[in-house]
Amino acid sequence: MPSTKRLAAGAIAAALGVTTLAACGGSDGKKASGEVGGSGSKTVTLVSHDSFNASDPVLKAFTAQTGYTVKVLKSGDAGAALNQEILTKGSPRGDVFFGVDNTLLSRALDNGIFTPYEAKGLDRVPADVQLDKDKHRVTPVDTGDICVNYDKKYFADKKLAPPQSFDDLIKPEYKDLLVTENVATSSPGLGFLLGSVATYGDTGWQDYWKKLKANGVKVVDGWEQAYNTDFSGSAGGKKAKGDRPLVVSYASSPPAEVIYADPKPTEAPTGVATGTCFRQTEFAGLLKGAKNEAGGKALLDFLISKKFQEDMPLQMFVDPVAKDAAVPPEFTKFGAKITNSATVAPDKIAKNRDQWVKTWSSLVLK
Image (cartoon, rainbow, N blue to C red; front, side, top):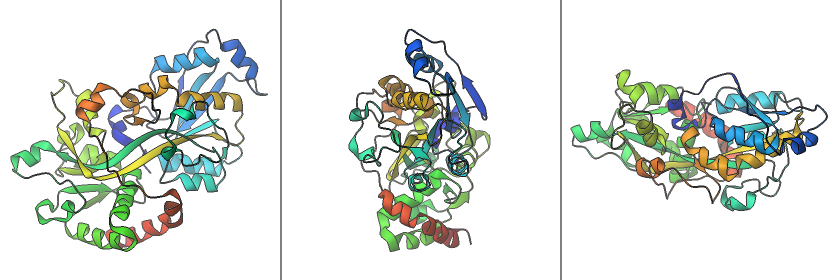
């Protein structure tokens, strides 16, 4: 699945492959070095989806604090990265995995790829996002909302109010306007399906998707194509002459359209249909068999530290989970505040996800 984040992170153009993010050790380095495991490594490897990003000053602060240098191994979208770790269970490619979200969490936990560790600072993280709080196999790092975004100019020109709810999307006036991602290959696509399940129930969501299909919804493989090619409201979509003014993306996508624009507009060119959102939480965990377990634990502590949490929004376009982390003003000014995001219990997702995807595929793709 494309990066669960995803998020307007596609706009960040993060590099693919292996990236080494080095920093010089500080006064605490000797202490940390003495805590390194048998390999004596001063490098800790973070395996992630392609959208992980952190600023150099923040990573240097981690090295100064612990003596460890972070190496990031980017491994495709969230689902693909997780599948690789399942296949290499017990002999992982790194020490910490970042990027499994609540839609895929059960797959990771059921396959036993993590070593339990209670990260320092969890008391600053709300209990409702600590979905494995009894066993601490994973640590919550960020949240985000998958929502339909709309092209403000299109709707202004048509003198048509943009949709605001799932119900709106099946109305005749929005026929042939929405592009979404394949549920089987995309985290945002799966999140949008789960939002419909939460809204219409175990039996009603199928009828909803029949109506959405009849109303001309377009399905593409992933977020990159949907948002940066087919969606008329994004910078990429404008260049590609996208013809769909509605897209399944994130509540944090509008700020990205402002921050990366040149010149910067006074307001975001896109908006969020706030009644179409599904809450996504991302986690990190210490990989079972990690060569640098001490470094992995230190990195998990750091991922929920105030410094990393405050750096994260403008690096990955997600919300921090730490209650003491301030949100950048660009998020508040240009983003949408979602207060009624849909959720589905993790155990229910675990029990039904595969069948929901199979049923959706037969209803929508055939």
